[in-house]
Length: 572
Ligand code: FHN
Image (tube, rainbow, N blue to C red; front, top):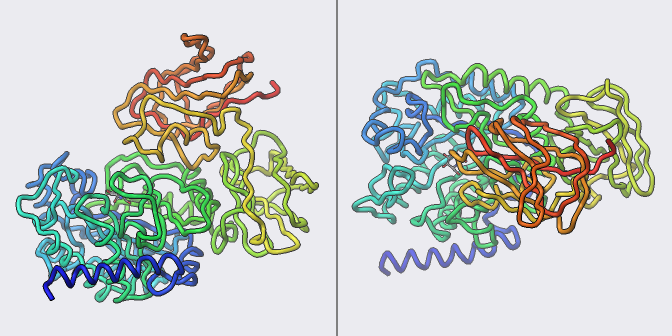
């Protein structure tokens, strides 16, 4: 039988398997026990590293863009991170409260940080010579951190992979995808055989045309055949939501969990998921990059876990082999918080209250942990729970009182007991919290869930559309393309409504001048003007009655991006 016929039969078998492994979770998919063990870890360290750290530009993407291809591909000949210490890196992860680690074995630029026998483009041929995967996997095992690797399917340097730099926008002269697929199988097998068993093989770079659902499902089955306990994310196939070139996750796409990126995934309990996010702005090392505050780091973790997800939090080590000290300090601060409050994170599930701009919740056994991320008064009123509250304490210390009625759970915490980042109220119930169906909280914002439009949306991706600033979920945001200096977001309230307060949570402090306007006929009438917005902008004004309202950002330093835009009718 010719080679093509064999491959067709093989792919048909795999497709058949594809239908089975997702429908009844049999055969290839990671077992529920494996997934739960990974879910219980909650928090992992993502590492993007390679010779490109010498330039301080983005790994893969700057090849042929900010850095000429010829220069980029020779960087490895200078790469000598003599201060690399695998034990120190793993200790950073452990001190942060992280339980697993995922490092880029090969990114889109094709450079391999292990001495692969399938290419010369690897660390062994750099001045550094040492096998980074060997040292890191050994250190992880020594310190009890699960070791995993990220592997890019696309390879903009390899002559057989059809697309090239910059950013997959060029075509190689003589590609050979079937031969490249063999290279990809050989290298991923090599990694598992030499450094495994791995926790996760974290695929990426799946969105381009040469990679198909059939290749992805075949690779998934192939690797599961080598290590059945391996967990593989949804980017092995074509199931990543919202990425151009991929489709919605369906039962046909292989992959054990979903991977929202640079955003907090929505509340989802029927399929495991993990948010991957940078502690700064760039995945790879960038000097003086903007780093997230401790508040944003911790609230991101809490909101992700509250939505039933894991957080894979990324650092980009420096060209000398160190993780930047200020990033280490930030991760240690997260670890100190987790050492005090980790019972509300590790081993929990998300809910029963779905995450909103002000609260997240997690549960374990009979305990529900209500994470209050923002207070607008002494008391928060939550929808009723179908089980009796038998005890109520503050995990974060101080005094709290709770009043349970048939209609609500009212929690009162005096100002001196409230925390700036997360006030954790522990409710003990008279039965398992896991029996409670997820509960959606109504938003105080008159704009919540209303029809939204905008002048620009980041890469036209729905996951960054204007509705994300009106969904009362501070884990999703409206974003605009980089370089955008003016933008507006408009909401149609459905009918004339009266409001007297606005609350805006800006993801990055970029707005320098803005106005709030309401539509009168065909004209816009300005009722509020300002300069900066920031994380917690709130302003009262004389009551306005309107149906169509917009935030018009007149000047910004870069693409405006808003977590939440709320219109409120509050007692002044
Ligand atoms: O293009 C990559 C990017 O460089 C980075 O590796 C992220 C991390 O998940 N994934 C891709 C973009 O979706």
